[in-house]
Length: 629
Image (cartoon, rainbow, N blue to C red; front, side, top):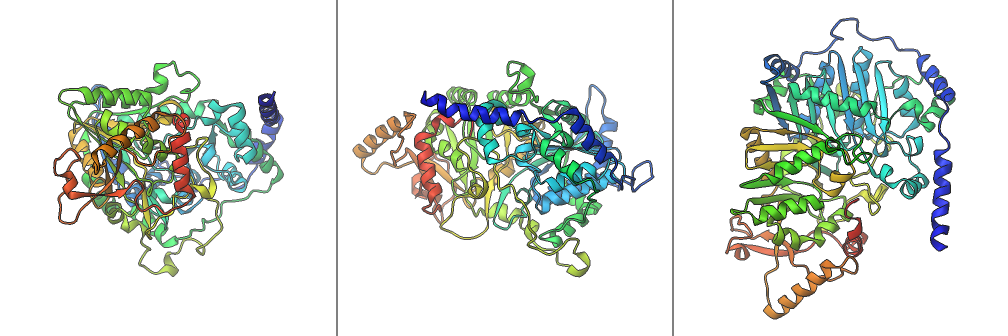
């Protein structure tokens, strides 16, 4: 009876929310308002829609021209530096002759999000067909902005994927009702990140459209990675995008209840105002770089490779609807296969070290091979992550990772020197005259920000709680967000897949696999840089101080770890280690490891705070939620 009393209110709320769908008449009325909006004339009459010349698009066109159905050619460039990744996007949008398709999980209204959105609007205004598909839960929900997007150009179309109760904005009540009534639908998100231009060149990887993905956040930025691919694989990106675009979960703006009502209530055309940027000098600089062919060659094309075998993969939008379909989890399946075939080495970089059941089976089997392949894992520390609930699951199973799978685990330091040096340029202001280069308004403009991670789960946090745990140290910090794998130094993957249960079973994922040792070498070097002593702590077994007490402690720890609840034992099998001054880096298996490394605690640099306590509590009670975090 008690359970019924708890469930019935949620069911009633959900029925009421779902019952408020739009009629066809309401949709037609909003569409009529959109069609009647003035200012729809294109700004260019040329057949190329006034596209700029682009060395990136030219390289892609050359690869396409050299390709045959049996012998493909590709140009591939790793986009590790945030400035180059953003400039490449703007350059390709401005160079588009026919079409631009953009698919993403998060789209914020900060400087980076506003800049890319404005570039897409300008492309549509000159006649390029632009389609934007964003996951509803973490993207546009400002009604005034959505009204402008719906009416700015007939060449610009925006759809939101899997909207909660047919709305663009999700209220707290809808959040709770979504979990209570239709958890699997609500929990399945579109995690793909793709930008593809003219069907010939595309960018995919881990970056969303938010300042912190391009090192424009003054406090907390992501270490992330994309890859630019020109050639036949770009058409596969278009095909995947189109599948999602046509899926029933991708909803046009005027079909959303709150947007529809807002459009009808505001019949006067809103226009498209000049964006107001918090840091206009940075924006101006990257806009200039995007039109500088020499800069793009130096920062993108000079380290690109010409290769043949490049495959783009994506899960289907029916991933949770029809999980029995083999192709529904295509990208997930290929990621698992490439790791399972390893012979010598797997280098894995993931923000969330929470293994799915299939991944655990694969790594356990690899650990039993003779010879056993080396498994290097670069991931977040509690000090560097903004997903502390997920980190708690990683922390709980450290012994399993070290002993059962043979992982070498390196956790990113929050003030890692490598990422700070690699992306220092992105956070600098333009050094020219601000009175001629200022393209925006004053700093400090009001803005809605999606303070968000990529792990929407029951034990996740929202709003201000998305900030990382407070630290003992001060200064700008970094968190790992890149998702990449290198196998046997011969082929590599860059994409959106976190190699965790959420990526395996709920979210749709996408990425590219490049079968070329040169690309694998580049990617491996980038990941291994993040494991260097100045950038990461090493996770290793504690050194026994009192043999008998240490053995008893380990037994109690094993029992505690195996319990689904009450895992409060504070002394874990492994902890974080720091390299001592004057020593050279060593692997954990090296006999001299403990002579050159000193323990620095389970959560180094993390201040005592509610989030530290939450981490302990989730370690104790949250094991059942590991698959949905």
